[in-house]
Image (cartoon, rainbow, N blue to C red; front, side, top):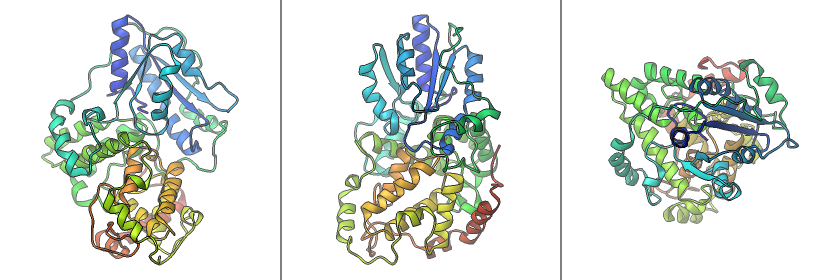
Length: 441
């Protein structure tokens, strides 16, 4: 899940094991055509990171196998073949998607030690022993542990260079990615993002741009998409092409050097993000309404029969065919960019609840749209943020139809707080031209 060389505690642990055993280290990264929602969008973003990963590993003397399984008829057991010649396997401790299943099933199928390391959170998930109720309960625990963990990762070095030609390796070049994607048995209808280029170098450029231009504006303008004040790093965090630890340290250092306050950004990056990982870790299936707090389940059940002002089918939602121009623009942003601005995604989710026949159907629709289209989907933040729309990690508010005491968001409120006209114009231009002026190459 963490597809990077730098600041990767899983890779650092693997290097320590290899050095202790006097063995070389091999880094295996796979991309299959059979993972859920495999598409041009997700494949392209991952493949765009491969050439730089290979360059950095080669420089360090670490072997690299990138295996692209193009067709279902091709082998699907490369990890097991590599494990047959290994002394140990090191992977990611990750609470959702394929990694969670693999960490349950793979260890009993291999004959070597299997280590799962948390390289996703700053404070390791295992340091918290139960599911936290909300940000205010996890915040003091995270802050108490931060001095220990908010430290630069160790230096990555191996004593024995990997000198053999790695087997099963798929050569990836910047100019050959489109051809590789086209050869894969995946969903070609979900096109690559017009806004985000994948890979480590793109992640570093995004971070640099945010620190230089937006960190000073973040606290005041983060909720207004037309201000372009957010980091847009969530796709890179999702695929592990950059770590939250690197981002936090860089933001803190930049704030200190320029006498800025980064508290609001660090709250979102650390406390809110790690609250989502905590939720997923202690939830067997973190995408069900049964996980909502009791008050939210009760109030939604009590208002299940309330009249809806409008009802749309899943296909209408997916095609952005509602009466609400702002909602439609947010959905188009998902379709085109592969990401919705965080504040507007809250509104997007709330309206799906309001315009669906039942909450269960609304939840299914949100996941149905997020999973194939969102570059930052299918992870703990996705499921926690979706369920937040139904009351997770929140508190009761004033009573409203359909929602009961679950927080409501109105179009008038969005107009007061943000420049919705500028946002709608920007998305229309994006759809019309197919070019994003904010794309960072």
